[in-house]
Length: 189
Image (cartoon, rainbow, N blue to C red; front, top):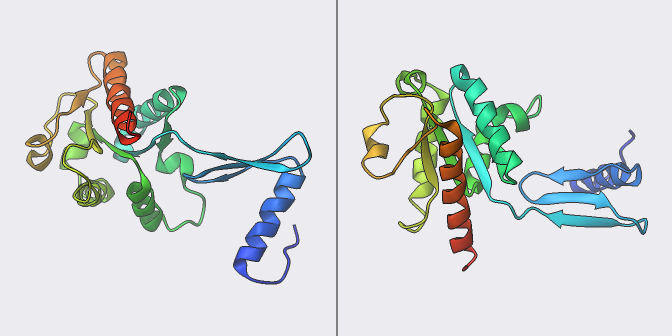
């Protein structure tokens, strides 16, 4: 695919138009999707579903993928690094960006997650910093236990957590209910 000379934004616009003219659609992460319409033009479908960032440790990837699937099946816009990051992306910066634009941050706790140093702990701290800018009654940070484990004191002393064990379905229903209730509240309903 040849690109035109000009500014980066002109090049991106050319690539997007070329993709649409070939019948494809183009998703602008977190905003919506451009699609060809029936009249030979293009339409933009804004994403209105709440954006949910999933934080987990690599050892819990199977449970995180299951949670991602359950949330997306219910029409929610879940964000998971393994599903959204592209090769070559600066992943620490992309993750911070995804957290900062998310409507909700779901932290998946397990025995492995609570004692492990690294990116998960950094994501927790960044999300807690983001939450400082929100009204106190607004739900943003949702702690989820994948198994019997402790929740860090800084989180457990202020936030109610959800258990996905022994009844995964019940836990999912509680997470979705909290997200939908806050989303309605945020729209003034």
